[in-house]
Image (cartoon, rainbow, N blue to C red; front, top):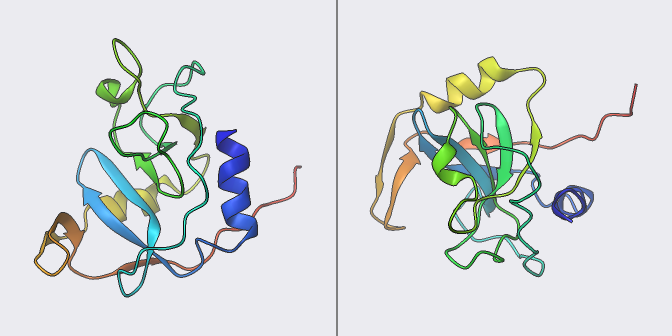
Length: 143
């Protein structure tokens, strides 16, 4: 369900020209929910939390971001920049990992080093000072 949800957003070109709106150095790089003007993107229905799928929030994995309710993930995702065991399921629901970076980790490392600040207009911390735009996500054919 998690992968199908992500692929649906890609098919809808939802992530085209979206922002990486959160960079927590040594923790996560998060995006998928906002356009370049910080307007919230339309969301599909929340999905069931599949954090018990056996995948862990390890460095360079991709997972679904969510609100406090466990089954609230929609369009936002994040890349783990280190092993984040605190995001794995345990006594409570974790965050569903659904993939991992196979190439290009150096790009995530650069993004993770972005200078951030508290964006007063939005009331958010860890917002990159210089906007980081996700131009497009491509699905590559299986080899």
